[in-house]
Figure (tube, rainbow, N blue to C red):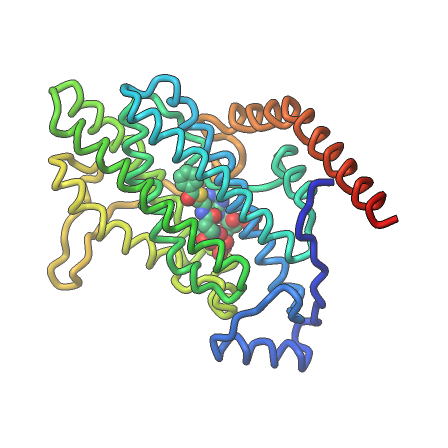
Amino acid sequence: MYSQALNTPTVLADNSPEAVRFQARIDAEERIEPNDPMPESYRRTLVRQISQHAHSEIVGMLPEGNWITRAPTLRRKAALLAKVQDEGGHGLYLYAAAETLGVAREELIDQLLTGRAKYSSIFNYPTLSWADIGAIGWLVDGAAIMNQIPLCRCSYGPYARAMIRICKEESFHQRQGFEIMTVLARGADEQRAMAQDALNRWWWPSLMMFGPPDAQSQHSDASMRWKIKRFTNDSLRQKFVDATVPQGHYLGLTFPDPALRFDESTGHWEFGAIDWDEFKRVLAGDGPCNRERLAARQRAHEEGAWVREAALAYAAKQRSAKRREAA
Ligand code: BYC
């Protein structure tokens, strides 16, 4: 109905000579474009990852949207409003990138609204105080940047190009979050306590954003071979920990992990065991806010029906005006 770039790529049978040639193109760092032949499994993996990513951006607007009316100053409100709008935009570029692989936006949105699609686990946690907005920018956008910068070099052109703009905007998001945390951490005792409490609650879920450990990641091997992913889940998680722990210490905050220690011999921060049972519960739909998030998206979709109808009516009017002109 409102798909804009629906494309029908030529699919190759896995293990066919054409699929072998396709892999040689990937190995030579050539970009794959929408009209290029591609193996069905490559196409399916991209649709899965890009659509989950798009859904994450859209659902990710909810925890922060919750604080727009309660931002402490006009400046904070304007920045948060811009950030949440950026996320809506990221969702739209990503749905458009998925459409170039022959899947309609309506179908992807239907998968989200009926609870059949995954989106990032992180957005099933609540935002309890203003400091959570700082922690989300610093940690969640920080983790997103670590994961998404390599996606700018993804083998599939439309996804890689969408990621360039997304990463630039995520960088602004991360800075606004860190600045909120800096102000709180240098403020009154109550403000410092809010910042610490937010770090305590968001730290472990942020580490889960990178996905299951490498040994349990079903898709990593194929995605690395196809150069969709450039680094494994565990290696990106470690890069994030190494970059973020010194930032937290600079703020004078502590991490909720007694096992956290710097290993001089490896040059990395070692961290404790992640609660993968909690991760699995959240993915299975049983996190603190899964039901609330889905209900909010369903409501927004129903309440937005008139906008879609108006857009269609306008497009029909334009089409008939063009036809009249041409006649
Ligand atoms: N949450 O084989 P694996 C943002 C699923 S938005 C939920 O390692 P893969 C932002 C995975 O999908 C951040 N599900 O998978 C927005 C798979 O399930 P299926 C979103 C997860 O794809 C607003 C299964 O577990 N970023 O930045 O190789 C405000 C096995 O995993 C999660 C992206 O989407 C999770 N955390 O690697 C602020 C980035 N982790 O499909 C910020 C693009 C794993 O078999 N995506 N699963 O049912 C990726 O880079 C990769 O898809 C992942 C997972 C690293 C996430």
